Amino acid sequence: MPKNKIYSTVHSLVFTFILMAISTFIAFICFELVANNYANISLIYILALVMVARFTEGYWYGIVFSLFSVICINFFFTFPFFKLNFTLTGYPLTFLIMLTITIITSAATSHIKIQAKQLSEQEAILNKAEKEQMRANLLRAISHDLRTPLTSIIGASNSYFELSEDANITPNPVQTTSIQDKKDALVHQINDDAEWLLNMVENLLSVTRIQNSTSTKVNTSLEVVEEIVSEAVMRFKKRQPDASLTVSVPDEFIMIPMDSLLIEQVIINLLENASVHSQSEHPIIFTVKDNPQYVSFHVRDYGIGISPDLIPTIFDGTSTRSARMSDAHKGMGIGLSICKTIVSAHSGTIQAINYPDGAEFMFTLPKEEAHE
Amino acid sequence: MNNKFTVLVIEDEQHISDFMYSTLTSHDYRVLQAFSGKEGLSLINSQCPDIILLDLGLPDIDGHSIIKSVREWSSSPIIVVSARTNEREKVTALDMGADDYITKPFGTGELLARIRTSLRHSNRLNNDSPLFSRPYSAGGLKIDFSRRMVTVDGNSIHLTPIEYKIVAYLAQNSGKVVTHTTLMTQVWGPYAASDTNKILRVNMANIRRKIETNPADPKYIFTEVGVGYRLKEDEQG
Image 1 (cartoon, rainbow over the protein chains, first blue to last red):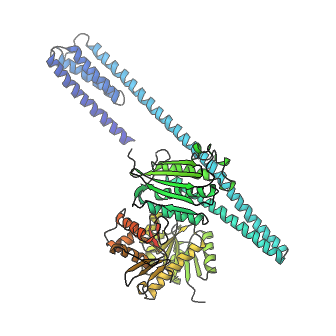
Image 2 (cartoon, one colour):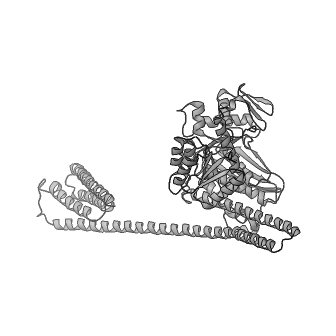
Image 3 (cartoon, rainbow over the protein chains, first blue to last red):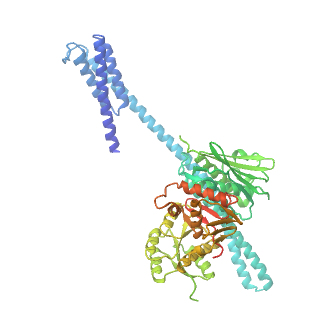
């Protein structure tokens, strides 16, 4: 802070001196052109005075300047020239008027400055509150979504232990195999829920990589499109081994700026969304198309489509998800809103389109880094 | 049973360490557990494990400095265990002498496959029998090093000398990840590596188009984004 203060003091001083020089110079020109034009010369000094008061901090520069201009006018431009003569009639009045102008202007400008500062502070507080609100909403939605699989995991593991106790009490060989089957089913369920939780957590992690949701900043580097696509597809297949999927990329070698991890997350979310919600055996078709300005990614399924009233808000997050999403995969609403956040942070677009025989999610990424 | 391979697990999380312990012992490995970097280093010195699984986020010593001090005198394979989000960290570890990495969370199958691959590569060194003596083969992809011939499903593939150099190096390290920097240095010399390594990526794209039926859904050459490439493991091990 003190460094700042020194800087602004120096700045004000220099500014005052420059204005002193300029106004005296202009006054001289006026004086030479139109002899004895006392009124114009005063006006020039008053104009400069207003500017000093407006653009410097505090009253002192203005007061010094008004003193200076009164002396200048007296010394240079009133008879006797190049001599100080304070006995001229009305002189104290001139000085008083200039001083008043200084003080009024300074007071007005400093008032304006204070108001502007207060205003921007208020805005910042409001912005922060809004962000807090968003964060709180997201957290609430997430904790709700996390609780479901966790409840199921805890329940399943409890039942597992109970089954073990039962088996110890009645060691019956026929029952033992059926108990073993039940146990396998329970562990399978635990595994499913854990996988789902992992997906959720990875989505959340990706959000933390976007530093600031309003200023859309991501760390991009040039990446080869087909490499990103193939890794995303590989990770998707690892998670959903039964899903059928056809992928195609353009023949050209394309490199575009992106945060690879985030874009992979978007692709995986869209593929997973298609495979879980389309309720269709028809393979998902994932195509990448090269356009002059951008690259577009299309995930097309041949399932039940999206209910039309959901489309306008489908990327908005949590509000509508319960209407359609099945219980086990509630988090997809968050998944899609995360897709939107990520794509927007890359200055791209994302949309959902309904067809008579299914749905398509597509997003675009610009080829050049957007210059703002 | 003294001919079991010894695996040292350096991991500070009790649960993960125990999970690896039970998996590996049930697959006939002898397992040593270390819960801190210091403990790990002293076990490496006293027990000379055949392979080291190293978690990068240890409380006492930085994982990278463990790799460094082990590499001063030992060539035992090191597999780094790390979280997915830190590509930079993985690349540094690999360039410092780690052999491979595995990303948390991982399944037992993945863990065992990585250990097998790394052990095989270190055995090859010990037995003094380089892979060059016999062809590489995985699925439909075959590479005959003596004749510099690459075939996919019996069809001969024409590669440029640079492309062949890349594929051959990946094949000699099949199953392991090879970093961008390593590949650049191996193929273009020690001063070629740059920030984007565009020349390597273009060549890889061309190789992919020649070898893979669908470059977006590869069967042989896998990309580890931000790290490097991995060629499907040789099946004749």
